[in-house]
Amino acid sequence: MDKAIPKKFWTKQRIILSTLVTIFAAFVIWQVAFTDKRSKLNVEVDKLTISEVSNGSFDEFIIVQGVVQPLKTIQLDAIVGGYVTQKLVEGGSMVKSGDIILRLENQSLKLNFLQSETEASRLVNDLQNTRQRLKVENFNLEKTLNDLDFQITQAKDIWNRNEKLMKTNMVSDLEYQKSKRDYDRLIKQREIEIQSQKYQQENAQLQIKQLEGTLVRTQKNVDLWRQTLENLVVRAPVSGLLSSIDVEIGSNINQGQNIGQIDDMNGFKLRSEIDEHYISRIFTGLNATMEFNNNKYNLSILKVYPEVRSGRFAVDIAFTTNSPEGIRRGQSSPIRIELGQPQKAVLLPVGGFFSDTGGNWVYVVEGDKRAIKRSISLGRKNPNYYEVLDGLKPGEKVITSSYSNYGDKEVLSF
Image (tube, rainbow, N blue to C red):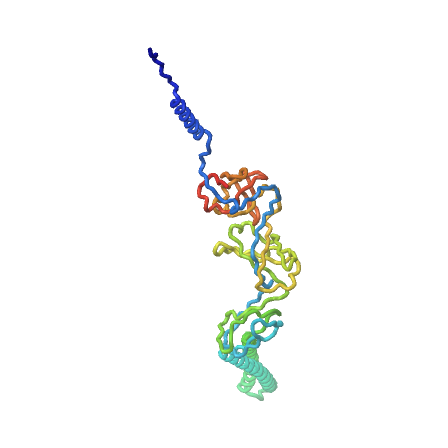
């Protein structure tokens, strides 16, 4: 008789199925609990720039480009206007102080000078005539007084004689009174003549004083016109290089017009333009250095131009010792401007990452297979390094090349 065999629960199929379910569940749990869910991107390590964070001395400086210029440049401006009749020196020539560069012609100035000279000559003649007239009047006064004194003496003699004869009744009273009146009239006439001549002398002296003052002013005017005519000859005010002259024969020049410039070749400076970000850090006397022909030269900020144009401002930088031999106007050279004293700091090399992150985060290399995104804080910058304030330690390695192709990925896999 057949016997019923009880059916087993854990069959081979169930065991296999349970095993598969268990493995799948374990995989899901592992994925949920232990795997890295951060966004990733595979990159080629040979296309990256990896730099090491280090401890070192942070030198705060900037590198700017300087253009060599003469230490002094003298502008040639036309003191008077006119048209050019002669051009004796061309641009690029050396000139000495007093050398004639241009000759100008201005007929109007010459006419004014002649009129002024004529007026001065007329005043000289008027002054001489007035002085001569005063002398003549003095002679006439002496002659008149001499004649009056003679007449007074005669009148007095007649009056005295008639007075004596009057006592003996040999002269009538009428004749006596007449002689007395004649005498008194001459005395009065003499006083009037003296007063009249005194007034005429005072008037003549006043005229002479006025004429002398007018003549002095007119002569100054003549001298001024003469100097103006002399300015029609344009001379070099200093010795140096006539670097430019922007006129030709026959061209008309207005008063005050710039016609060229002379460079003083006894020294040089460098003109540089600096980003406005540093305008509060740049001041007169700040130290700088440059290299020329494998030699290092010390410089200092000579002048700061505060006007900002297109985000930049200009400075003049002068050599603290003699200028380098062989340096020429218009040459350019990099200049290192020191912004502060060296200080110990954690340093991160400069790279293209900054333009993508603003210095707020970087990819830090972990092991040999990946780099992890990390927030950091950067401080000052020089052309070689950033000052690390937080987020990085010396010895760590950072990707410092551009992040423009990485988007917002948190992990870079090599």
